[in-house]
Amino acid sequence: MQKQASQIIAIDISKETLEVLSEKRSFSVANDEQGLAELLKHVRTFENPFTVFEATGGYERNLIEALASKALAFARLNPARVRSFAKSEGVKAKTDPIDTRMILRFAQQKEIRPDCPASPTRQKIADLLDRRNHLSAALTQEKNRLQNSPKTIHHSIKRISKTLEKELHAIETRIRKLVKSDSALHEQAKVAQSVIGIGEITAWTILCCLSEIHALSRNKIVALTGIAPFNDDSGKTRKKRRIQEGRAKVRKCLYMATKTAAVHNPVIKEYVENLRKRGKPYNCAIVAGMRKLLLHLQSLLKKHALTLAS
Image 1 (cartoon, one colour):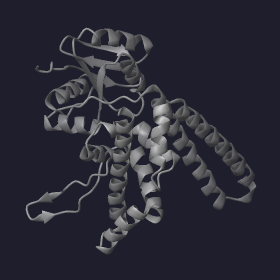
Image 2 (cartoon, one colour):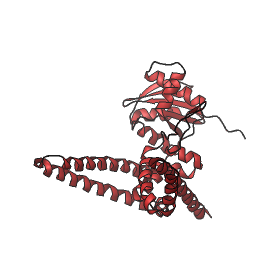
Image 3 (cartoon, helix red, strand yellow):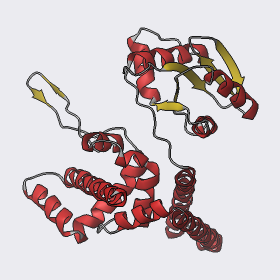
Image 4 (cartoon, one colour):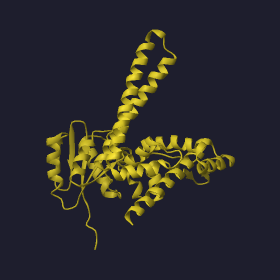
């Protein structure tokens, strides 16, 4: 039986408004609870709705929660891809209605895969991990200031540092309680941490910010993480391959985990050392180690899921 084609609803998101365009109508609503209710009412008039919108750095969060709560399919698009598509179409002007039209045309012409929304617990953990990153960055700044600042302000810097450390501890305690409250997540975290080099933070980040790790193929999960090197060749010219885009939060944690694994994990250590002996630069070898570590983790999590299912 042929699968029914999705009916696309495109949305351009700003802090104050949601500009909506579908085959039925074009309208604008406020980016608040009342506006989302009106939008959901419109989306549910379609038999097979598929809502698409650009990532905005956070303003789309309420929309995602509203769509996920009703089990409605959606996809968060890379704004750089949509803008490049608009330029390729000869569209230079940029307004909310124009942006919405470009989002709709982009989704209609490209094979867009619906996002895999995280469970409420995993989303809460992902939000807390974001906050942990904020606090960690602030703490690093304060410690750096202590090294080159006059002694007259050292007391203030140390006081703020202690406050940040206390808040970091509180955030991590909340995350541990959430992980333990979800039996499946708790078991997956233990599986992930059984790999030498992967600690709590890396395990939480991968499981909550890369929830597709079970559903996608090896190549797709590597590309989604942003550690797949892409060719840059033309004719006889062979330029250096580079990684790009992907989930920066996951990639950052995986990078630090691989640096640790390259010292303490016998498999990753041997792999990275062999690449170095062949003349590969250090970072190139580490990125290759990141891919190996991620795919090994994916394999372990899939085996764990099969064991539970059998």
